[in-house]
Image (cartoon, rainbow, N blue to C red; front, side, top):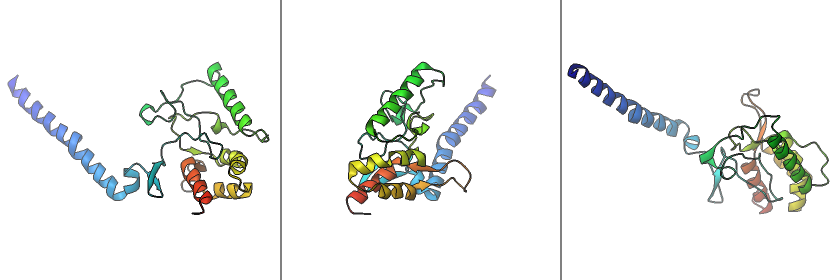
Length: 194
């Protein structure tokens, strides 16, 4: 039995060092050199202040801002430590009630808007942390944001178009708008910095 114990213990030690220390340090080092912004969490600063990450959705509730996708994380929305979806199927009455409630809230916030509500404004993403919305979801909110800020709707719509990211390589994924980046751009316009 002792003849097998020593090689197994040595192998355990070597693999622990390789997989638990050397490999993570190597990958982290390569990531920090090749992709410094992404390796640091894709953090967004504005006017010298940390505002969030491009990768994690944030709650915006003021009518002066664009609103992101709903979050199903617990115990509070956009909890990065509790990333999860609601796990409610499309026929679940609780999901249908939640979607109806969200549609009603969007209609109440912008009573004159009779356009169809984009689905991403009333359904949570699988992670509950999606930082992006569709261009249609952003344009749906443009009138409300323009009225709340006292600026022309065309200026807000132009801002949405400038912040629309196209699919990777032109065909992988969907066009999207990062809500945090768009809201920070709105603040810069309001403060005369853009």
